[in-house]
Image (cartoon, rainbow, N blue to C red):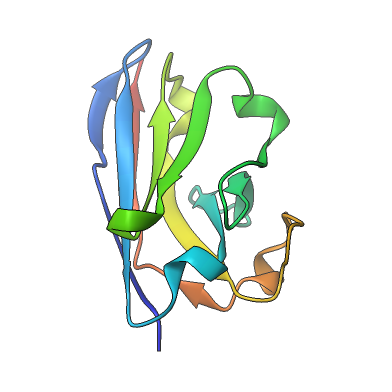
Length: 126
């Protein structure tokens, strides 16, 4: 059973930066495609960014492209989300997720990811 634990969320002013981390345990991290998703109150969970199991392929959602960067360190079983130039509309609970079946593809659908963390709150004030 894979366990994912996120950290790094918090309150930041618009234009600021945060780096989220997600540490995995209980599985073979280097075999999983990893994704970051977010969910704001009253909204559906949405894809933010994903990274292939080797880390050579990434995908970012349109609203965060150019501001957010996903990366991973397989030696540390950790995936990161560097968030720059944050906006109030980025306010949400951020989740990391693992997909063990993706191969080299990166799915943007939450239903493809089997394992989820508990989430970390990101609040951006204007």
